[in-house]
Image (cartoon, rainbow, N blue to C red; front, side, top):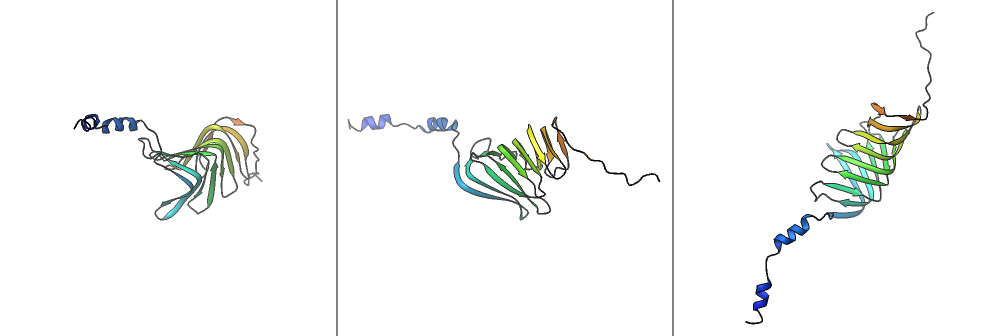
Length: 179
């Protein structure tokens, strides 16, 4: 009896203390290597994301996923054309559907246009791209650098900040010339 009494006295419920310690932990839910994620909507493939490492933090209050060694996203427009985004680093915020791409970001469109910048945000829900960083845009008609970009995914609604460099503009003759 003398030997077992100290064991019963020292036993107590530490569940609350363990919960308090773990409450502040920011450990990921999981880590995966060489992933391939396919995003669909109504059985139609919208995008394919591949990455060497995916770290899942969806166990936190503000859920997100991290791609610390880069990612590649192939997304398809309404006509089925394939477009590609590459970045050295990425964060995907689950609740807001916002993707933060950093480091040598390149958006390559099916038509050959290329956008390069150091950081680009992709609002997947509204299909909108934006950055406050310098960027370069090249296509068959334009080749320019600018600060700040705000555009839809098709680049048909396009706003920039200050241009850096020049844009070549050519005029065509008006077909309604007075004769």
